[in-house]
Image (cartoon, rainbow, N blue to C red; front, top):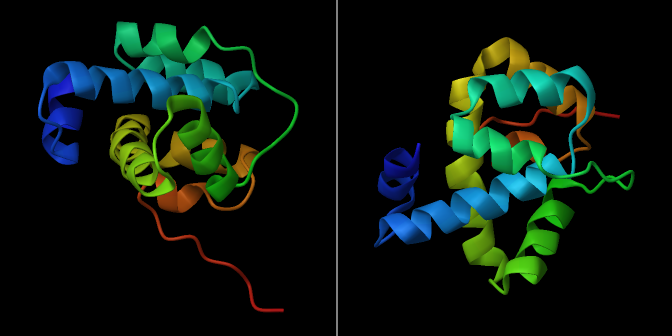
Length: 126
């Protein structure tokens, strides 16, 4: 997972890729609960699953953009670089999860997360 994130995100070192993975998965771990959380942890590599499941889910939900801004604040990054980091990691997580599990994960999250996982987010016209 680390080498894939390093390559996809164009990170200069393995350590930087690991730091990004840890930050993004910890943030996602604060957003998911229930069966989706358990099933997603099962498809992640062991170390990544530990980071993800070590977090206690928070009751307050954040939109996709709020998720990025919150993570930028926690890590000291800019919203733009944090958006890159999130997209790099969650894009891979989405591929590991597969379509059915990712559909369930996205159904649990507020609007704005599909794009973070590398999917188009379609909305119905009013």
